[in-house]
Image 1 (cartoon, each protein chain N blue to C red):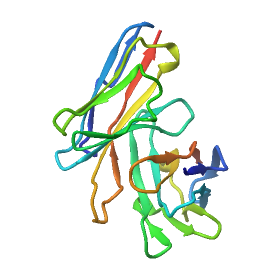
Image 2: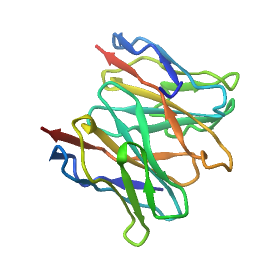
Image 3: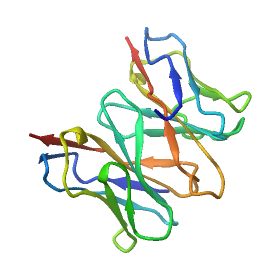
Image 4: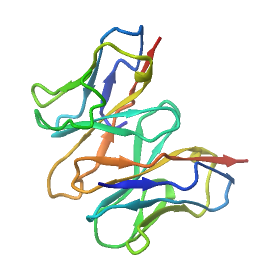
Length: 112
Length: 117
C-alpha cells in the first residue's frame, strides 16, 4: 500500500516570492507521482507528473518538482508566485494506475 | 476544461433518501475513477472501471455505495439510505490505460457536492 504526507497544511507567501510545497510518500514498490491543483469549487487539474526518466519535472504555470527516490520525496517549487496561484495543492501516487492515493493537501495563499 | 462532466453539480437530500450521480468522461477514456473528498482533505479513492468492468471496488465505503458503467462510457454512483456523514464532494476522473506517456494521468470533472440534511 502507498501513503502520502504533505507536511504543511497551509503556506502563506508574498507575491513574487519563491515557494516550495513538500510531499513525501511511502511505498514498497515503484510509484508514479503527481501534483494537482484545485481552485475553489472546481475539480482537480494536473500540474505535473513523474513517470520515469529525468527526476526534475516541469509542469504548467511555471511549477516544477523534483523526484528524490532516496528521500521518497516529490517537492513542488515555483520561483515566483502570483496571486492567481492561490489554491489547494495535492500530491498523489499510484503504483499501477489503479488506486491513486492523495495527500491531505496544502493550501497556498499568495499575499499582495 | 478537461471535457469530463458531472451531473448534478449540487445535490441536497434528506437522510435516508437514495441519490445517484452521473459522470461523463470523454470518449477516449477507457478508465473511469470515483473519489470522495471531504472538507480539508484530499480525494479518497472509491472505485474504478476499465471499460465496463469494475476492477476495484473494495474501497467503496459501505454496501450502500455502488457504481456502474454499463456501456463503458458514462458512469453512475449511487448512495442508498444516505447519512449525514455522506456529505462530501464526489469527484470522477477519466483516464487511459496503456503504454503511452498519458498512462496513469487522470482528468477530473468538476464534482458533485452532496449535502445530506
